[in-house]
Amino acid sequence: MPHRNLKIAMLCVHSCPIGSLGSKDTGGMSVYVREVADNLGKMGHAVDVFTRVHDSDYEPVSEMGSNARLIHLPAGEDLEIDKLALFDYLPDFVRNVETFRRHNRLQYDLIFSHYWLSGHAGQLLNRQWCVPHVIMFHTMGAVKNTFAVGEPEPELRIETERKLTHDCDYVITATQQEKKAVIRHYGARPEQVRVIPCGVNPEIFRPIDKVAAKVKLGLNGSKVILCVGRIEPLKGIEQVLRAIPHLPEVKGAKLLVVGGDEQSRSEISRLRRLARDLQIGDSVTFLGLVKQDELPYYYSAADVCVSPSYYESFGLVSLESLSCGTPVVATDVGAARSIIRSEEAGYIVADNSPHRLAGKIALLLSRPNDDPSSISNIRSSVSQFSWARTADGVNRVCQEALADHHTLML
Image (cartoon, rainbow, N blue to C red; front, top):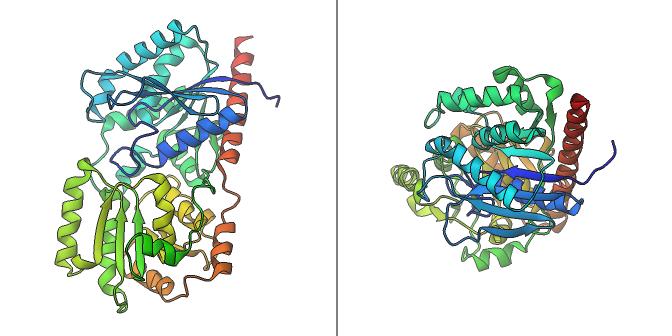
């Protein structure tokens, strides 16, 4: 299919792509939007990423990468609005996007929405602009509710996702499992759903000498178990805490938990209490938010990274850890089977029961952890996952959506 340079409106309303990773609403989706926008720009497309004003310190318009801009627009009077309450302000956001477009005399060829709230805004714009609309949910409310962990997702989200599935041109998912879920829960047509795996930035996520990384972080040679990501029940961190007492005696072993902000305070407090009840409080450290360029030190210092989630649409943490040469224990969700393909790279467990997690964590803690060839092999095992390849897949979907649209208009 011929390549045409496009003007793309990318919507990420509820979560700023340059927000603090690991906070309540900022995680893998923000990394995805940032990296894909930059790589689409490098391909010759012009990408405007629209998000809601959430912090008065950010410029209204800022560069986000090659041919990519980040545009903050108001939606509602308060900076802090509950995610669900934001739904009622989406028409305001859409009007502000249209005002920005008309003021700058822009014409967009395509809308690419991320998450159900952005999808609803994208559908409103789609009716005005009459251009193709591609959506990526990143997580799905109907799937999250099947696990009955944490607060249930509201019916508004599920019905909106179902409607968007039928109204948009294409749905992008990161895994075959997620494609099957969109078909099963929302009745998507198989040919409408395109699977495009996520990527990793190997220039950021690279191996650092393990001893040097531990010294920098003040770990003094301790064995280190690492968890990274948002702090919420669905991520399964509680199960790692419960696994620690089942580990063979490892003198001075520490569990580091990276992620969480003020909105995660109650969940972190609950996990701290659990750690004390399990008598492992001195071995567990909740580090809060860590900047992305600092994460490689934590991945490299760790002897094992654990991803104990009940549900992941992909699982970027595992990919980042392996790119840093550190093995992973992950539940069999998201892209785990595509990412962890050998015992050298780690283990996949059927579920996040403490005994299962403890058994595999213990195996990795007992291995030599500073063998350069092993670190290199682990890193090279995920070399096929790149954001350039992800963006190439997104480009193909966009070109196809545009071709379909033009055919319909004839």
